[in-house]
Amino acid sequence: MKMIILKRIILPILAGMSLSGCVALPTGPSVPMSPGDGKPFNIYLAEDGKCRQLSERQLGKYYDYLSTQEAQYHYDNVFVQCMTSHGNRILSPVRFMP
Image (cartoon, rainbow, N blue to C red; front, side, top):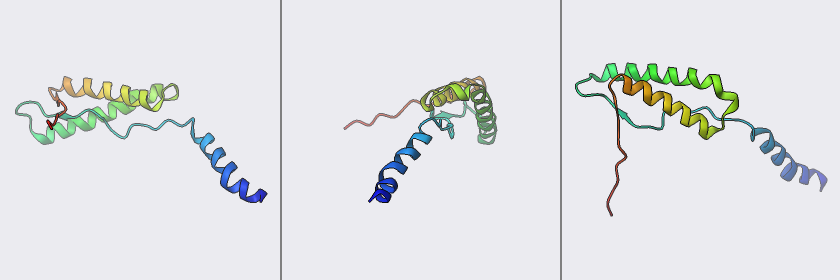
């Protein structure tokens, strides 16, 4: 009985507590972007890669002090600034009418 309580109740609680302090790094931007007018797609992809790297480097400076949501916000902020400085555009979200 004690072993069942240990396996089914206490171990999952301890595992959850050990993971609760972890912050997930963003896997990419959550902001949709598109190339600027007349920009070749391969150049846009190169700029996208550079801006993702910049966002990751900037985030690394403050990683220990951020929650997951704050990390995504700061990543997106740096990414958007970088991409728009290269002449790319932020896409507006599409709204569907019922």
